[in-house]
Image (tube, rainbow, N blue to C red; front, top):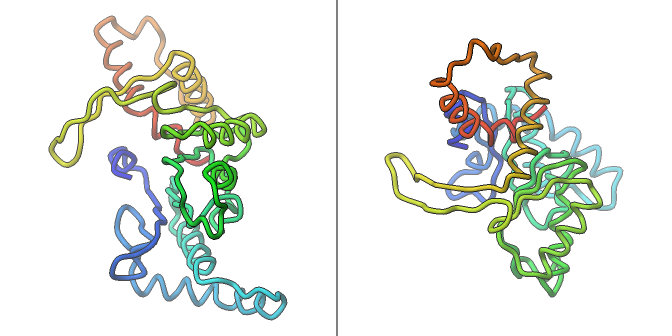
Length: 239
């Protein structure tokens, strides 16, 4: 969120649960939406939810309503990038109606075992459901059985995988003003993938780099710094 905001990109963030007020779940530019906007969105969604309830044996759940509210608010704002936290599992979670270009998977453990399964591999299979076709998967270190399920899904979806400790890693972490300062690394293969994807996005946005003759030797390190700094948000940016 902070990284993307530093580039003046409008962010929508949907997380759960909330601590004190339900509007904390739906944030735009890191600020919870107002009570007024929340109620307006609810009035828009409530009528549709009632129609579904009348036609279905399973009523719309509390989390499904909140997810619909978040997406409606993000669409109306509008936002440039959405950071969407899965509620439970992945494949059948309400948030999975979107095909995110980037899927971030934190360490998988015995979460919600009564609903997702009684072993890590089964739970990983459910969580892997958020990997969309041609997505980029960023995965934390996983148990072997969980990693296997994630990789199988990634291959099926023709996704690019970056695994902590393999394709990328954090070399050092220090407390800094306003947050943390990280020193990271990534493999040449993943770096080239990111470079190619960035170039495709630049062409889509009709951006053209200056001619080689206009780029001095002194300027090249600055351009490399720009690329390293902006790489992540270019990957995350929707579109």
